[in-house]
Image 1 (cartoon, rainbow, N blue to C red):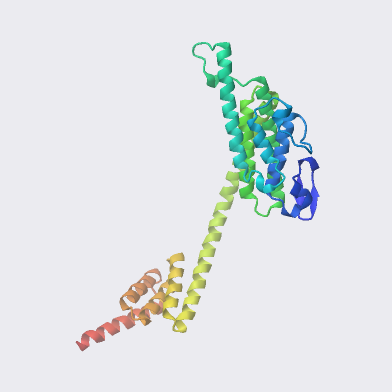
Image 2 (tube, rainbow, N blue to C red):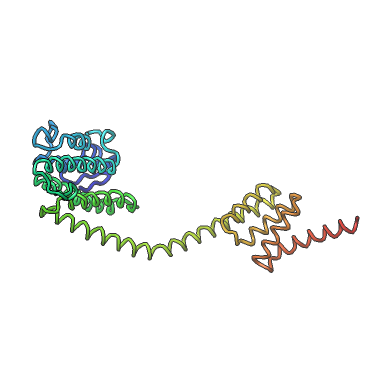
Length: 313
C-alpha cells in the first residue's frame, strides 16, 4: 500500500477510510487498519464487508480475537490501536492462553503418559493453520511496511525498526508455533534469515557510521564552544561581565580544553573583583596553552597587585 500527500495508491479493501478520504492526514494507524483486514480475511476466509461482523460469527475461532480485529478495523483512527506493540501484546496473550487451555484439554482426553509435559504438546491442526496464516500476514506486513517507511519517510530508521521489527518477531514466534504446517515452516525460516541479515547489515552500518558520527559530534561541540567564546568576548568588551562569565562557562562545559574560553573567564572574573577565581582560570588556560598571552598578562597583573599590596603593608 503506497500513499503520497495528494495521491492514493493501493488495494482499496486494505485501505483505511482516512487514506481514501484525506490521504495527507494518514499515519501509522492506517497500517494497523490494513493489518486488521489481513487478520479478518485470514480468520474468516473473506474480506470484511460493509456490515462488519465479528469473525467468531462466521467461523469457529476464539471470541477474544473479535475485539482485537474489530478494534483494528475501527473507522476512526483514534479508536484503533495507537501502537502496533499493543496489538502484538494482545495477540500474544490470546495465543498463549489459548494454547495452554487446549493443551490441558488434550492432556485430559488422551491421558498423557507418565513424564509427558504439557509444554511439549503440539497445537491442534486448526490452531497450527490459523497461526501459520497469521504469521504469513505479519511477515508480509513487516517486510512491505518497512519498505514503505524506507521509501516515503525522510528518517525511517526508528519507525522502521519499531514497526517492521515487532511484526517480524511476532511472525517468527507464530511460525515456530505452527512449524508442522508448511506455511508456518516457511515463515519461520524466511523471517529468521531476514532478521539475521538485517542484524548483520545494521552492525556493518553502525561500525561504518559510528566514527563519522563521532567526528561530526566533536565538530559540533567545537563550533558551539567557539560561538559561546566569541559571544563572551563581545559581552566582556561591553562590560557585561556577569553575562560574559556565563558564556565562557558554557564554552568550557562543552570543550574543557578551550584555552581561549578559560582566558576569557579569567578576565571576566578579574574585572569583577574575583582575583582568586581569575588566578585559577588563568592557570588553567596556561596549563592547556603555556604561551597563552592573555592569561600570562592576567597572572602578571594579579601578582603585581599582590606585590604592591604586600609592600604597602
